[in-house]
Length: 188
Image (tube, rainbow, N blue to C red; front, side, top):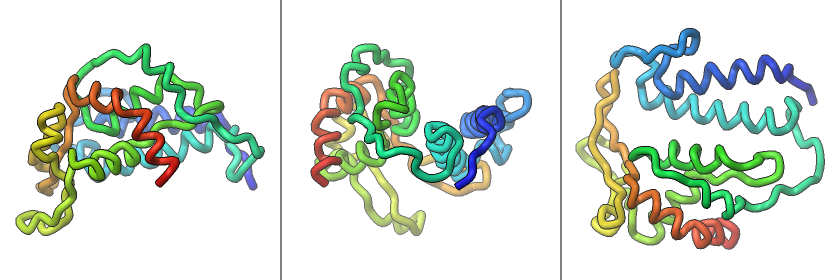
């Protein structure tokens, strides 16, 4: 088990966060549309790396468990400070919700748990797209009725993908059902 320099870890988090936002990590300026930092695969990878680095930071820079302290469930009371900012993807939405909690004490919300609940309850559907030749997640009419939409996008390298976005009504719908979503994670 090794320990990493927390200052270097903080710097790495800043750079990864900038790349995930489609910005140059050095000067924080927006990258050109055709820049690799705007590729959805790179962006998803950076969010994954950010989660790993945040977990490492939460653990004091130590790889492996440092104590048997169990974190509490996501604090629902932190939602009282939620304010709609803009239509966004579920990743950005859960990031906003998690930003207001003490991650050393509480479990973070996972966009995967929310997405799984939305699929299970008929707001999203996963199906094979023969035109794109891959499995995709789309909104259903039920999902669109609560403010969750999808649109076909093209990455800078020409790869087509569907982007799922949550407008104000969609974000509020998730918040209204968050207790049930979290319970489904515990029982599932």
